[in-house]
Image (tube, rainbow, N blue to C red; front, top):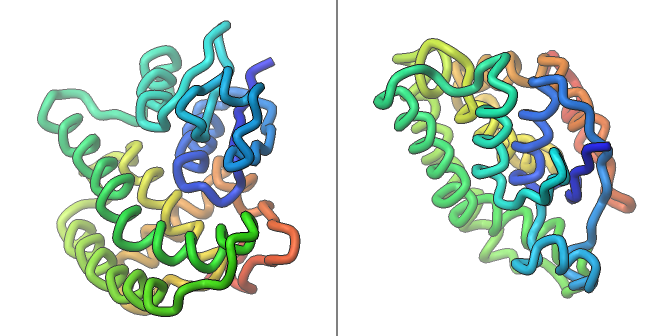
Length: 221
C-alpha cells in the first residue's frame, strides 16, 4: 500500500496530496509529528521533514521531487506541459511559492498562528503575523497579473504550478487569512481548483482545537 507521511496543514504535503489525487493514485495518509524527531521517522527521512511518500518500494522525499517523480511514472493526466520553456515556467512558479511565498507569507502566518500552538511553542508574535499578512497582498496582485494573461498560472493548462499555489493558499484560507475580494481573477481561479475532486480530502482536514474558517469548505465563496 502506498503511504504518505504528512501533516494536514503543510502546503508541501498538500501539493503531493493534490498530485496523487489528480492522478488517482491511492495512498494511505499517516499523520507524522515530525517535530518530535521520532527515530523511526528519521530513518525514513534523515532530514526530518514531511512529506515522505512510500511508493514503488521507495521512500521519496522533498515535495517537488516527489511530484515530478509521479509525473514521470504516472503521466496521465499531465501536470507538466510539453516543451522546455513551458516546463521552466511551471518550475519557476513552483519555486516562487515553495520558496518566496513560503518565506514571506506561509511560514510567518501559519507558523505563528497554527504551528506554535500545535507544537506548544508559546504565543504568536503579532508583528510577524502582520508582516506575513502585508506580504500576501503583493503575491495576490502578482497572481492576478498572471491570470489576466493566462487561463492558468503557467499557461493554458492546469499544472503543478496551480497545485503548488493552491496548496499554500488553502492553508491560509483554513484560518481565513486570504482576502479573496482583492482579485476576482484569483478568486475564480481558486474556485476552479477548489471544485476539483482532488481537493476534497483537503477540505475535510481538521486540526484538534483549531476548526476551519466557515468558508473554508464552501465551493461558492
